[in-house]
Length: 184
View 1 (cartoon, rainbow, N blue to C red):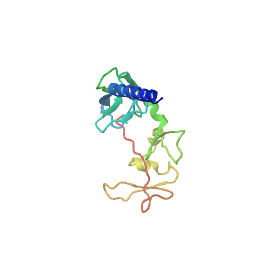
View 2 (cartoon, rainbow, N blue to C red):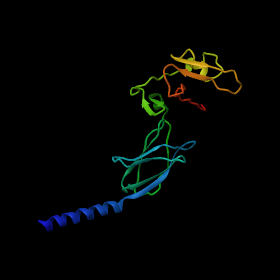
View 3 (tube, one colour):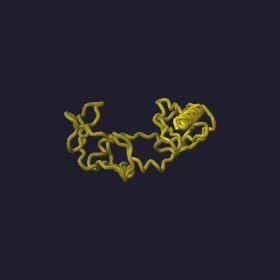
View 4 (cartoon, rainbow, N blue to C red):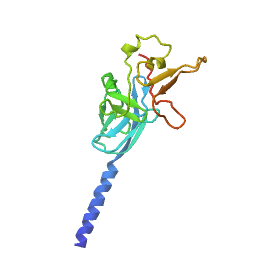
């Protein structure tokens, strides 16, 4: 019986060693048409092996089997899948998927779809925003978003002060908001 257990153990270790020996390291760059994408997700499909790209769009994945498939994803871009086929370097350019941008809300602690959001979120539609003459985008919130007060100090170069009803962190009533600037 001991001899059978020892043989089983040796066989299992041998198979494990061959499986690990076939695993490889895959690296590369994820970018879009304008340059590298920092924070893009790279995942070995069907596993929990994954990483995110660095500030320069580069990634490195260890323990990838040669016949694996990598899935590349980023908010606002189409997910792309590439077969490893023994390659050590895989560079990819993701295509924009603007239709998905309407479904995502960026918050101070991550991203959520509109149906998952649990906090108070206000949206100002651009079609309505262009109808109101304002000096800056912060003034657009005054009167269009409930519970928001915008005050200007009048000091040249000083930005407006945005107050949201309720409590902030200690000694701070500044809201957490996201300013979106687009070149389009």
